[in-house]
Length: 119
Image (tube, rainbow, N blue to C red; front, top):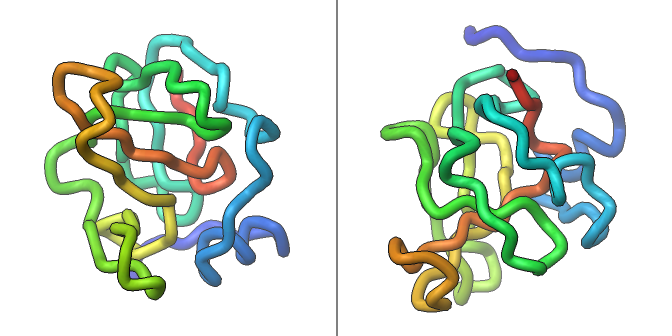
């Protein structure tokens, strides 16, 4: 079995039970240092800081993932596309397309609590 970090109750609520942290509260919402982000549960690399952009949506936004790091699945609501860590399947957030925020026209809306920053 892959290495799994111990999670707090709030981390479990979001990562294991597909919850959402409150908007504009996450530690990485307005974080723009150089480095990359890894899955909080298994530490698999997910996103590079170069792909992060300010969308004013209340959660960290990325227009690209590290190749093979993120899996897209139809959300339980049948309308949105959920994104999960490809390694451990921990819930990250949702992906949206067609919003014109960046030339890639994709926004990965990710819960800060689902990630850790590595400088």
